[in-house]
Image 1: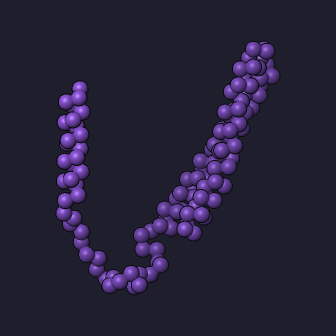
Image 2: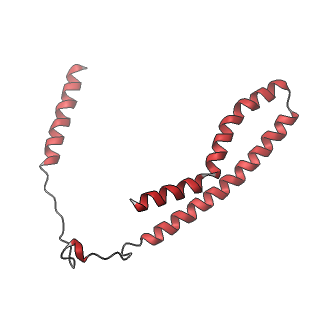
Image 3: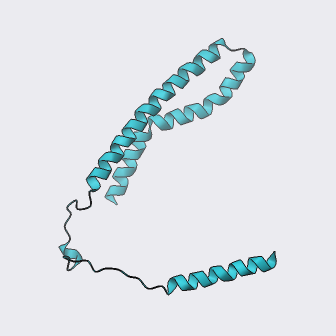
Length: 121
């Protein structure tokens, strides 16, 4: 076992040393002389990705909210119809459900705050 560990360590060290000495084949950027000539236009289509992300978050929030409400209704009916032991069991499962539902309802707000914070940085 020690011998195998030493062999793996040796191979890892050799791979790290070889990866440092690897040549890089990068093509020069044409049409841009210096970073001062760069413009702030949307050349990479980031607006499309941002729009798609916003649509995806909206759809997930709506679907998650509907599912959360339906699960709450089902749990509420089971709680009302259940025995004392079942009610105690439902109370145990209620706290993780409430945390999950709160995260689902607040997902778009959290994502918006993170997006605005990271875009300003």
